[in-house]
Length: 91
Image 1: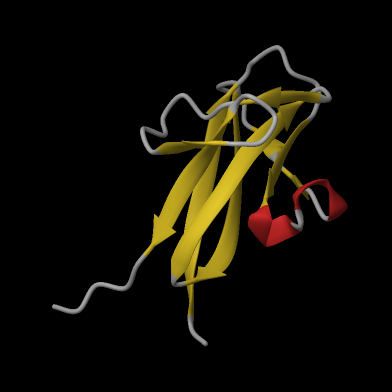
Image 2: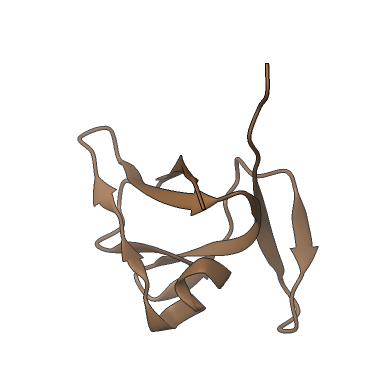
């Protein structure tokens, strides 16, 4: 199945470590380490097949929402998961 490149970004200039976790990483089983830029933005790029994915960030060991993500769903822990939709565009 074809995959699409998706970039995740979080502004956290004082953070020491930021990881991306979600249903596509089995949550904390296979977290993706993000890289800090000189502007304080942490980024990572992953390839995902078409679909809908729940995710969150871990900032220095603490769960963190993506402030840029408007689509959220409740999770069983009383918070929210962010939702990323990966779709193919046919022109």
